[in-house]
Length: 168
Image 1 (cartoon, one colour):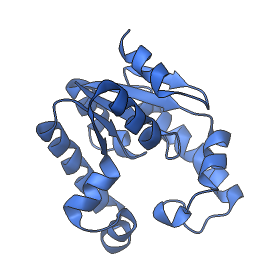
Image 2 (cartoon, one colour):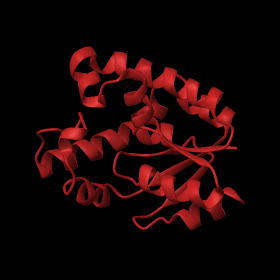
Image 3 (cartoon, one colour):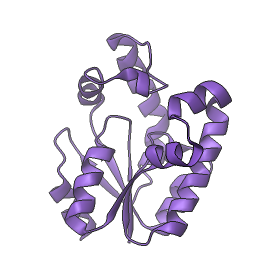
Image 4 (cartoon, one colour):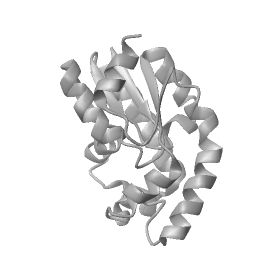
């Protein structure tokens, strides 16, 4: 079974994904890391050198490759992955999708203590700008996220809760 975690950057997709994969005995795949390995470039470098449109196509190609390569995996998608092409429909057809619905203020708290230069859409922004970006971006993306088969809500979601949700 493939499990795709979707939600805003900073919602815990990678952290919870690693823990969930370990609990299930599955492979963990961080889609951004997968892209970086395939492209031999960092995500910020792809954005800077080739732009967001090219990155989104590479992201789509990587998503399709992961589905072909793995049978049992937990995939932490990029925050925008479900919002481009027909990616959310593709993921719903290929496995179980879970929207990590974390409040924007909790995401901002988490992100402001990380290296924002690793996140091309946030690099160089102040906390107020990050908050504004999160609210606006979530408003645009939530329609896609809500198409996930499952939703886990709150700022303190655990891998155990995700495992229980997937077994319903």
